[in-house]
Image 1 (cartoon, rainbow, N blue to C red):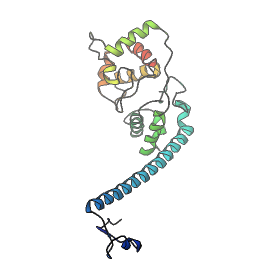
Image 2 (image 1 turned 120 degrees about the horizontal axis):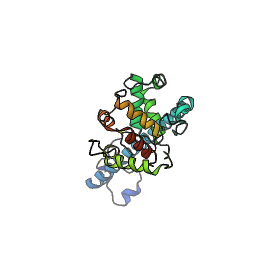
Image 3 (image 1 turned 180 degrees about the vertical axis):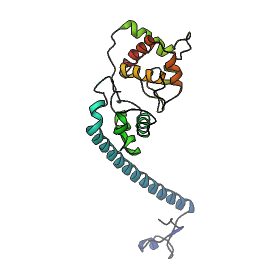
Image 4 (image 1 turned 90 degrees about the vertical axis):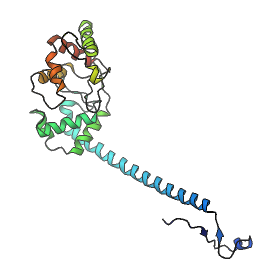
Length: 238
């Protein structure tokens, strides 16, 4: 809207009786600037509010779309809440949405090989991949109950400190002390041990090449005992 000028006219004649001239009521320029600033601020806040409302509507639409896809396909293997129906399928609950979306895109493009996931991802749009990632990231991840304390002790050591004798770096150096990962590196905490072991084997054999190439070196330095132990330990992290 137009800015307030230095002269504001008041139609009420009572102002003239109060001593104002016939031309109108005058305000100081500093006062005018303050009023103009406030009007601009109000407009800006209104725009932000409208954008926020629009963003909320879009987010709700994306969530509904994600729910529909999960209820139609994903839940069969990964569970309705991302808890996974079998230890051969990864738990998606709590996983970073960026990582999940990237994996879906890689399955679709063929960069990550999977006879199961390739057809499931074929029809997904980038927006749907993101929506699915956001949907599962909001779900609560759960941890396994510790069983073999001696195996867990080995796994904890490898995860936290690696193996200096074989040149194996610690898992925590990239994935964090609690295995929470980042937007670029997957959350490991609470993941099924069998799934983790399977992925380590794929990295070692170069059957999986879509992610950080560092994992090829890491996996090649792990003994079978270390891989099993660290996978069991990771599953107990919450």
